[in-house]
Image (cartoon, rainbow, N blue to C red; front, side, top):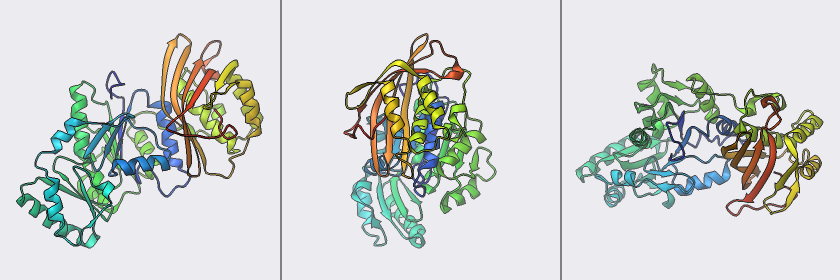
Length: 425
């Protein structure tokens, strides 16, 4: 949140599994569409918040499996943990707040008396969360029994049932909705309350998100689970701020952005021909997203006119430009383009995806931008990532022509490795 000097234009607060992430789509099309839209049009002045029932362990595992962006804020373990930035720095104020009338030892004692509760894995047991599996037909009775026994022991808890099988016991003040309310209060105190907040979810543990007063637009994705659909029918059917989207997962989030007029809702991935996409102003973030989308299409042999693409690439890359690859080898852009010719279609028919993350442009003089971002690609389950710094120039070009790439420097990130035959730009 510190990177924004004023209120975010938009804050998206999204559940992950079956909301941002579609586990039934091996090509990850909807999340990649969202990624391209967010980095091209929103990252610089908006906030992305992931709100998940997953523990930190399972959250990090999902990031390795799916093409996910890096959020500004991460709410995990059903709203019991709030962290900030790449380093995932914990919010200690939230920890102190949750300690009120909470004792994990007492929760463990009382739940051990109920044989129909099956403890979830050790990674899912957190300081302010106890998680179990329970059969649907037993859930309501067990929740009533547990609530009564824990109150008698002096605790003030919240019991959430979601996904038709997951039962979570939390402090009364916890939960995804309360974590969002806490963030809003914190941002408001700093004079940075977002202009708009869009909450997105699909299951019972997301219902609280849609009750926060300062949330200007909320949604329920098409593939929402039964318990959330029931909540929607009982509590929000006629609420104009809540829609049940026609699209699934991240595609439903994009739909909601358009429905509530929160900003641009056409992903660069949805443009029929990126080479025909012309801007009336210089936009380095958009240029970066476009550049790497075209690179993906090239290697997947999805470029209708390869010669036109190469001519465009030559036009936007400075003849004197240099590329330093993650191995530290310096090459001219001319050499890189020459090598690129030979790899047309080398990823055809494969689950190959390219995306960029945390695109942050800085204008360093009247016609030059320094752009820092992460460039990632994934073939099947193998994911590679590098930090990228690019210098783009508007000198002697019109916005419709696009910015000129002057220099690109990359370094491997987090032990990611590859070989010089398979990595380009």
